[in-house]
Amino acid sequence: MLKFDEPQCTNPSCFFCSMKEPNPFRRRSKLASIFKEIPRTESKDHVLVLSGLWNIAMSEPDDPEFPSLGLFECMSKLIQKSINNTPWLLKDQNIFIPYYAAHIIGSYAMNKEELASLAVESKVLVVPALLELLRGRISWVEQRAAARALGHLASHEKSFEAVSLFEDEIVKLSMEIASNCLKNVYRTFLGVEDSLRVKYQSDLLTRGLGGLETENQKAEEWGIQLQCWSLYLLNSFASRGKSIDRICEVGFLKKVCSMWGGLVNRKSPGGIGLLKTLCKTEYGRNRVSEVREVIERLCDVSRSSDDWKEMALDTLLLLLKDSNVRYRVIDVLGHRLVDLAEDVAVGDRVAQVVLQDYHKIKYSGLKMSSEEAQRSIESLWEVKVERKKKEKLMSETELEERRKMVKSLKKQGKKKFSMGFVEEAMEIYTMGIDLCPLDMVRDRVVLYSNRAQCCLLLKKAESAVSDATRALCLSGVDDPHGKSLWRRSQAYDLKGSARESLMDCLAFVDQRLKRSNRERVPYYAAQMIKKQMRDTWVFSGFDSKTG
Image (cartoon, rainbow, N blue to C red; front, side):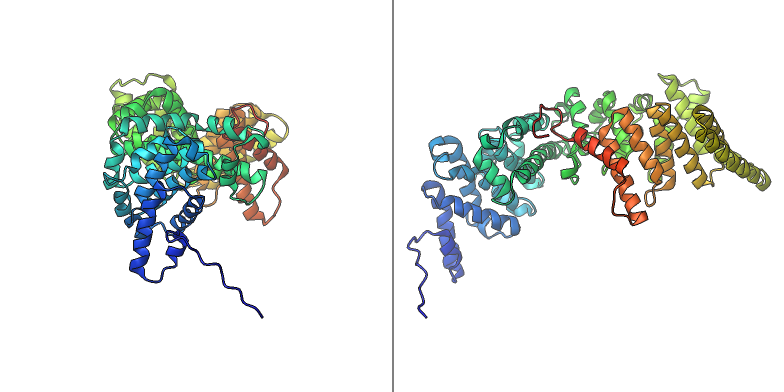
């Protein structure tokens, strides 16, 4: 059988041949020489080299070999060449190079501070090169890779100093990108007919795998990642006390509280994470507390099944602990404070912070700016303090009588509700809640949940959210009350809060499937998920043919 020898490569500067060099010293010498030569020469093979480097950087981001041989300088020069030499950029497949170069920088700067420090050495000029891409000099695709790379560089103390030299522009650009990138991605790519889309962007998104559906999914994911990396950059500055005044611009705060990453990027804290960082500073707490929409948004997230519920609660606690802004926040929250105080994880902390000045309000004439806030604090005191005292003083006989009355009221309320007397049923459930001993947790859960159902039928969305939240807080995180999840999802839908409705409905379906071992999602829940997925789609605000 004939054997054919593989054709020998005659290029002494071939990257792939150099990688096969068995002598480590010669190998390193060849690679260092190649990294110097690539920006100075023209070759169709350059894009293949960068594609290979991209794969290596993604799989071995902590390997210091390539960065120590001048990789960062090579990548930054290629980015600058892409910006300054348009004919070269549009030649062959060079259009892929700036994306790969920025992504390679970001991968190697991701984990190890010493590698990130190597990237920002004065002669390398990585940050100015990435800043050109962040300005949108090519497209949103390269902008995403640049935001990711700058975010990783800003996450390390040593390399942050180099990034902070461009603080004003990076913060300004990050705010603009976070606010407008989704619209830009939609109008330049997702909302464009597939035959008219920029081909290299489609190729980068799919890498030859999958069709139009995969392309659309990846474009959505990348668009959201661009927004999240912009927020991450802002958070890097805010966490060091920099540019707080600029980031706390009221118009931006109103937008940022709704930036959540969607279901395709649930690991990012999004806007909630940035708000929490801002609220760790006195100036940030003062500005955030002045924006009613932000406080209400934090409260809704805190009373939902959102992944960032705890972070939203922590942010509200930071505000409530500050005596200079506490009552401003309480005035906005009103009765919702009692809902938060029932939370198993942080309820006692919320109550402790809010009630520390109760005696000043009750006996020293301290007045809240709204009657609702005043009533809420008094109600919270009754639930968390007075009621416990009263029940401790009750005899076992009296408590037992109350237990029997509560059981009877539950039956009466259920009967009235089934007969269509919803308002009367709600009044009976309210009596049951007022009488129910605190240790009858399961009965309190049912009473609150049933009253929430009454509120739903009476179109009292906020009251339904409040009662369902209290039921869920009492039932606990490990075994949430299924009916209350569904009722709160309906209430948020009635209220127009699609995100919270979706997260509660998903939690309801998840719990139902686990409990019943069924494989099918209930039709009514599937319809709710479909509706809220449409309404919470991050591109739903734009004219859509592909939505």
